[in-house]
Structures are given as C-alpha cells and as structure tokens.
Amino acid sequence: MNLARHSITATNPIQIFDTRFEADCQIFTTTTPAGFAVYRTWPLKLIRKRAEFTGGTLAAAVPCHTSSLLFLLGGGRSPLYPPNKVVVWDDAAGEEVAELEFRERVRGLACRRGWLAVSFRRRIVLFEVGETIVRRNEFDTCDNPRGLLAMATGAYSTLLAFPGRQMGHVQLVHLSPCIPPTPVGPPPSVPPSRPPPPPSKHPVSIIAAHESSLNTLTVPQSGRMLATTSSRGTLVRIWDTLSGKLIRVFRRGSDKAEIYGVAFRPDEKEVCVWSDKGTVHVFSLMSGPSNRQSSLSPLASLIPYFDSEWSYAQYRIPAQASHISLSSSTSSSRSPTADITDEEKCMVGWIEAPSDRSEPGRDPPMQHQLIALTYSGGWYRLSLPQGTSNISSLSAGGTPLSSSPPKASSHSRPRTNSVSSITSRTEKGKERERDRDRKDNRELILQEYRKYGRWDGWG
Image 1 (tube, rainbow, N blue to C red):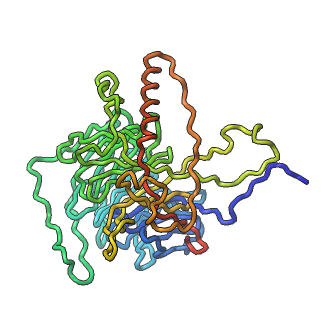
Image 2: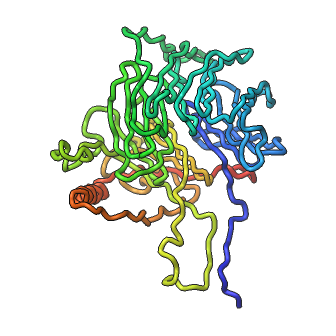
C-alpha cells in the first residue's frame, strides 16, 4: 500500500479575484474567473450574476453609489480588457455603455454619483459622469503604486483625497456637492437632510500625515474625517479634513503589518481596521474610556509606545488552507511551520442589523454590526460586545450558523530577540502589555457564517 504524500483539493475551490462594498455597504460585488456578481450584503443574497464574459477575466467591478453603473477593470493571467482601460457597464441594461483608454496602467478607482477619479502611478485624472463622460481635471501625486484615493459619497459631500506630491502627504480637493438620489416610492417619514452651511474658513488642502509612504486612505460618507495608515502598519491616524488637525491616533499593534483597509461606522462613532495579521480591530472615536489604554502610560514621556490607544474589541479571521496534506511521515519529522497557512485576506464593512437581545413582544432594536468578506468565499457577520456577558464565540440568542467557520490558527509569528538592554526592557514591557491584553480582550461576537462566490449556486 502506497502511503506517500498526497494532496486533497476541494472539488470546487472558490476563486475570488476581488470583492468590494458599495459606499453604504448595502451591496457588494465580487469577481471570479467566470465573471462578476452583485450580492445583497445582509441578509446575504445573490442579486445578479454576469457570466457572459468570455475570452478573459476581470480584476475588479467597482459599483457606483446609488447608480446602476459599474466600472470594470481587466486583470488576471488572461485579462478581459487591457490594463490601461476602464469599461463603464450599465447593469440595468446589461451592456457596456462607454470605455476610457489611457496611456498607462490604471492603478485604482473611486466614484460617487456624477464623478469618477482614476488613479495612476503618479497622477489622478478626474471625470464628470452624466449623459457623457467629460474629463475635468488632473493632479500630480508622488509615487502611488497602490493607486490610493478616496471619495466621500454622502449627500452634499464634496471631498476627494489622494496622495500629495511629497511622500506621506495627502491632498484634499473639494468637488461640487453630491446631489442626493431621488427617492423612490412613498415619501419618507423623515424629512430629507438639508445642505450643511458653508465652512467659515477655507479648508486645508494638504495634510502631512506620515513620514513613510501611505498604505491606505479612507474617508466616511460625510467627508468630515480622514483615516490614514503608512507602510509600517502600526498606527491609524484620524484627521479633521476641514482644519487638518490630528484628532486621534490608534495603535493596531507593535509589529509591522500590511493594513488592508479602514472603515468608518456610518454614524462616525467607531472605526474598524483589518490587516494581513488576520485580525479585525474596532476602535471608538467617542471621548471616554472605551479604547484600551496602557497600564504603563506614566512612562509615555520616555517611551511614546505606552501612550497609545488600543482596540477595545477584535476578531481573528481564521486562515484557510488550500488543501489538506496526507503524509506517511510522523509528526515529529515535520517542520514546525508546515501547517501554518497565510492569513486570510478580507474586506470589512458596516451594516445595521437587529440585535440578538430583545424584549418579549417587541421588535429587536437595530444595531451596527460588521460584515467580513474573505477572498476564499467566507462571509462573517460580527456584532459588537456590549458587556462581559457577551464575550463568547456566539451568544445564546444569536442566529444559528449555516455552517461552522474554520478554526483560527493558534500559531504566532516568531519574533527576533533584542540586542540592546534598553530595547530588551521595552520588549518586556510590551510583552506584559500583550499578556494583559489577552486577559482584558473583548472579542467580537460571531453571529452568522455563510459561503459566497460559488458559481454552482453562488453560496
């Protein structure tokens, strides 16, 4: 009997090239080798799939807020469109309505009702989208290989943010106010919002956010704030876009990481951060003792590390292995890192959903929750902890899981030892902080787990 090493691969592995939320997280799009699909975020439901694309694959399908338009980018080993082209797709009509061709590769897109911004390696091109697409402006940037840019999408918002000409700087440009969409159906019970009063002073145009290169740029729908992270991936800085002042500084962790994204809660009271460490962190933007503080804060004047604000809640997205290995060798002969898989890449957004706690005879109150979408097809609905009794993997009154999510890996990354006595003492202090954090940590509550992205039924 041959007991040599074999690999067992899933019969229908999920291949997701890109997944992203619409501005208000009501829907999200995902691209696979067969095309793209549009999902309702919660309750999870496939709205439409487009599998008629042949001859190539898509890198992204970017939805335009309160519109039937999507902006398609080719990508993968056999791209459907050249990398220097943006195709405008009308999903209501089910056809291409326009295309934009450039002289270089498109790095990123940001859009809102009536506007489209296209990012390249060293410039941003701005278009007005109406009956026709008109080129309105162009801005120079520093080296921007990630194609970073962000655009506020709320009613009467004006902000467009992108890297400035100097590394670590952010340039702020104000467009015409975003016109709210025309309501459909009976008139709403709540009167429509009015335009905000004009600012009393001219808003700033440049924010010196970081000394190193930028890694992410995020603005809420209102555009009143800006969240920036750098290539180090340890800090998240929140800025006031009108005055340019630094509002808060949050610490994701002490070691270097690649932050994948930052998302503001719709009411701008909290912010969530996720990275290649596989953990989603939630910070409070309200004044008060919500965020965790270091017990060694009196040493902040000597070691600024101890003056940090840490997340008050977090959740670790389990890593998924692409295959299961069977080997005739014993466990003692295996490498200690043989079964350690890469952390799960994901996208996170905010929704409003009924609370799992309600009084008899009354509808459950609505609360803000998180939806995490992984690139292996995992869909996680997470609620915020509201007390020590909620610290569990799933509350007693939560929605039953459709299937069990993969277990989180318990392996930790190896750390190098410090060579100096001062650094060693600092590391010991950080280790004590991490031990305390493990004891005081409040986990987000997993309410529901689903799978999405399969072409054979789409989850």
